[in-house]
Image 1 (tube, rainbow, N blue to C red):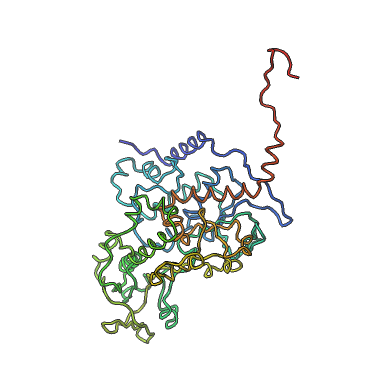
Image 2: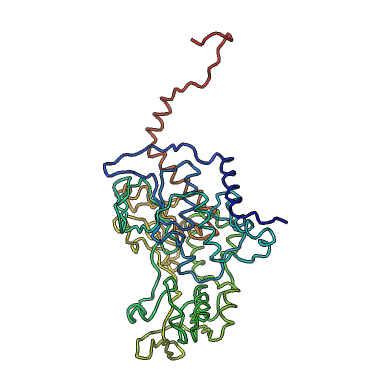
Amino acid sequence: MTRPIGLAALAEQVARDLERLAHGGPAWTVPQESAEGHVHDVVIVGGGQSGLGAAFGLLRERVSNILVLDENPAGYEGPWDTYARMMTLRTPKHLTAIDMGLPSLTFRAFWEAQHGRAGWDALDKIPRRDWMAYLRWYRAVLKLPVRNDARVTLIEPLGRRFRVHLAEGAPLLARKVVLATGIQGGGHWHVPPFIRDRLPTTRYAHTSATIDYAALAGKRIALLGAGASAFDNAHAALSAGVGEAHVFVRRPALPQVNPIRHMERSGIIGRFPALDDAAKYRMMVAFFDRSQPPTNDTFERASALPGFHLHLGTPWLDVADSGEGVVVTTPNGTETFDFLVLSTGLVTDPALRPELALVADGIARWADRFRPADAAATNPLIDAHPYLGPQFQFLPRDADHADKLHGLFAFNYSGLISLGLSASALSGLRHALPRLVAGVADQLFLDDREAMIAAYLAYDEVEFVGSWPRGEAAA
């Protein structure tokens, strides 16, 4: 039985493994100059799991002139210790993600270092806050170059170079920019217009927001949506003292089949980019239509609490503000609630991202590149997604926009249609990270091909010093 070795010993093991793999070494990229200051080879926007994994992958390729930016304080990148309210991750514990094939960097190694093999065997799913602790450890043990409290406001194209503007401080220059901005990074969280236009923001919140459920103690809240976050929030609300939590679902029954589990087992996640456009489109239409069920443990925890109510086959037809609260109209009549919580997902479209304001019009969408043979199968949500290249690079709508977009990569949920469950899904990161890293490194190399070739042709460092006949000096 493997005994816990502790995180300090595991960190030493990581260091030894990296040494054996000859990690590091001299950078091969060609330094760039600018009167404005330092030019980074790569700036990664987002210091969550995708950004950290991308940074480590680039360092493995000896691309070291990089910087990771995150708008949050150190240790609070991503959703795990901010707005996420699930007790555990939803992915199976055995799936690897950002270790880049190094066993000592896996979450399993992190867990066993603290709890031993028996602790791993006893674990069902990864606790959410332990995953965040792992990400903090991963960042620290790899000494990744992350700058926190750095919110990117605009990415300005300079022609195969970018000026990255920040909310505070001087802008940065970068040859490549990777948007590792998570599930919401390709668009924004969706609030249905009939709610957004009819209610003050004090009456509702999306599940992605910070919600003070303790302030709603004893109140009645209504949650819209069948996603797992609806049940996570119902559980969190009732646990904080909310009197009643009513979950409304327009479907007559909750989905029971999770297509992601099949995708993980079948090889679809890793091989999805090899499909033709028609197959990708057809599969993603089905993915959106089927939806995902809540996990069994999430549903059981929420539904077991007093005050939980589930309304199936009950869409919201209208909402109205009143002195007593929010009046929600459904096919079954009206009910009044003190607060609404929206588990209504997100909309992906580059035009929704303020940092892309200067380039969004030139980004190719799926609507620009593909139309299903059956017009009835057209899906506007899919059509608005960017049509990405095979290494997550934005592609131009036409040649006039090519230079502006060259070097800009979308390693976030906007890659869903082009590259499948990849950049923002733990299930796909182990496949997506090598693809992204190779694409960024290849672009850097090809951009400097003439200098690289010239240096190769001029290379004349003597290696062989033997002579013949032996003992005579070489001529």
